[in-house]
Length: 49
Image (cartoon, rainbow, N blue to C red; front, side, top):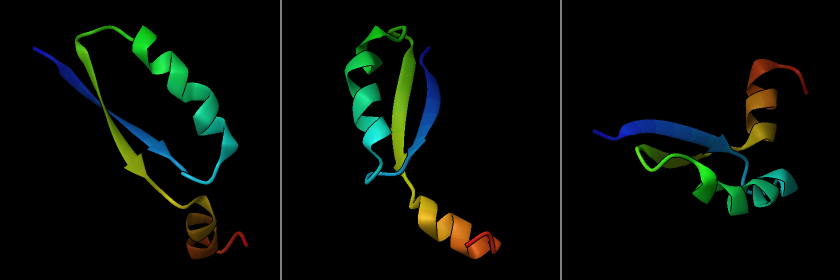
């Protein structure tokens, strides 16, 4: 039975594009569900910026 995992990522971050080619190296029983977030909005909401 596949296990679900959420991949929270900021779509404008360059680091997610470095990770994407390596996602196929994960075990086949792990189903990745991408969840886009906006880091700037989270920081603004928390009062950091």
